[in-house]
Each structure stands twice: as structure tokens, then as C-alpha cells.
Amino acid sequence: MSSLTLKGPRRTSGLTWTVLRLHRSALLVWGAFIVAALVTLAWTVWITADTALKEQAYCLDHSPCSVPASLHYSERIGYVATAACYSFLAVAAFAGGALIGRELENGTARLAWTQSVSPVRWLAAKLAVPALLITLGGTVLVVAFRWAWSAHPGLVEDWTSQDVFVARGPLMVAYGLCALALGALTALVLRRALPALGVSLALLFALNFVLTRLRWDLWPTLTRTQGPGGSVLFPESSVGTQWGAITTSGAHKEGFFCLGSDRARCMAEGGLTSTYVKYHPASHFWPLHLVETGIVLAVAAAATAAAFWLLRRRTA
Image (cartoon, rainbow, N blue to C red; front, side):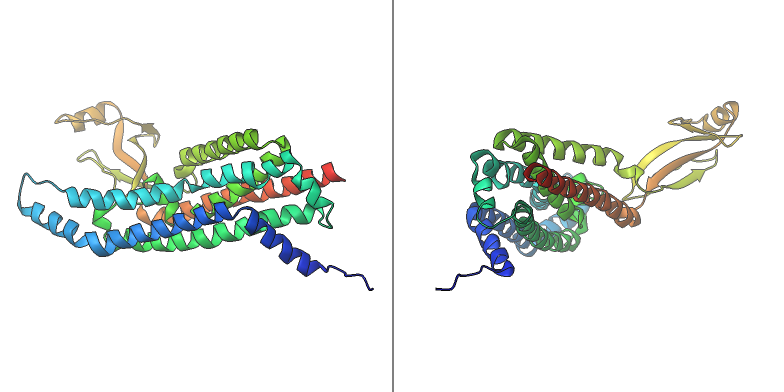
């Protein structure tokens, strides 16, 4: 009887289905999350928007006035934005715990490596399948959220909101892919599920915290100035990063303002020629968003490369 040779493509397909079967619960949760978000957005825009808009129009001519429908509209869109923005935390926990850490801890990974599956191909399948699902599901969610957010801008949070900023573009997907990569790397380093889960969450939270703090420094700001005769304000729907006064030598005194009726005299005595504000207009959304996306993807690529290097070193 001739021996049966298992070819590469079939083994690859088998690995893909194995990953899907082993983690079908996570797949169902991810799918349910996407469906719930889409239903919430569609219900909010198609069913509740008319009531909220009529309420706002009524309140323009009547005061005092309550706006519960408008608040509920904004809250529902905001809940989806928050869930989408921080979904990477769930991905990090899954990658560090169930996807990689648990199999290294209970020995099933080494068992797979003895069944004609090399460690590198095992890790590639473990990362490629979730990465594809994160990218596809995240893209659907981003497109749906952009549609819902732009349907009635007067009823939702501005683009400057942390959650909206992430959920409106590929940064949401980038954070998910980064969480997957860092979770896998952490699991390979620690080789225990629960510690890897905790450390993965901490790393992703720290990364997001740092980038959120640095976000408005990732792209040059615009500057508005005003002479001593008036005050300068931040434009509507913008992010203000700095304000102050300009001296006769051209130096900027951050945070300094002369207020009140004696403003002109105050500025003259202080050797000030004008006031200024530095800000990001709404048109800076995409430059800021794409720069942060690039940073997050670079971290994901570095973590993925480190994970494969560590695996090769330990299984050589």
C-alpha cells in the first residue's frame, strides 16, 4: 500500500480549520459584537433620529426644554464608539490567554509540533486567522460607525472625542492587530495563560494611554493671532493645544492672557503685541489618525517579528 503524503496547502487548510474550531466561542462572541453594534447603529439612525431632531428644533424656540431623545441618541452612538475603541483589550486578553498562552501552558502546542506542523507554521496560523477576522470585522464596524456618526452630526460627540477618534478609521483595526501581536509575544515569553492575559492587557492599556496623551503632538498645529484690541478664540470643532501672548521680541508666553477693560494697557505694560492660540482643525483628523495608525501598526509588526524570533530560538 502506498503511503499518503500530506501536502503543504492541505496542512495549512487543516491548521486554519483547527484554529477556528478551537476558538469558535471567541469567533461567535466577535461576530455577535459586530452584529449588535450594527443593529444599535441602524436602530439609532433609522428609528430614533427623527424624534431627536424634532426635539432639538422645538427647543430652539422654547426654553426651558428637556432633550431626553437627543441624549439617548448621543449615548447609543457613544456606547458603540467606546466598545469599538476599546475592543483591543478583549483581543489582547484572548491572544495572551486562550489563543497562545493556554496551549503553551498545557502542552498542546508541543503536541501539535510533533504532528507534522512546525512551530513557525503553527504560530503563523494562530495569528493569521484571528488577524483576518479582526481586519474584516473591524472594517465593517468602522464603515458602519462612520455612516452613523455622520448621519446627524449635531446629535453626536465631536471628532475630538477619544472614542470617536479611534472608531472613525483604521486606527480601530490597527489597535486590534497590535493587541493580537503583543498578546502572542507576551504568551510566548511567559508561557502561562493568566499571567500572559494580565500583562497583555497592561501593555495595550499603557500603549493606548501614551499615544492618547501624545496624539495632538503627532502633527503640526495651526496658529491664530489677535492684536491688543481683541481676544482670539479657538475655532469651532477644533482641538486647542496651546494659548498665550506674543512679546515684542516674538517670544511666546504660554498661558498668559490680559483680560478685562484694561487689556490693552496690560499688554503694553507686559511688552506684549498680540495673543495667540494653537489648534488642530477638523481637517487634521486624517493626518493625526493615520500617523497614530502607522505607529500602532509598527508596534504590531515589531511584536510579531519578535514572537517568531523567540519561537524559533526556543524550538531550535
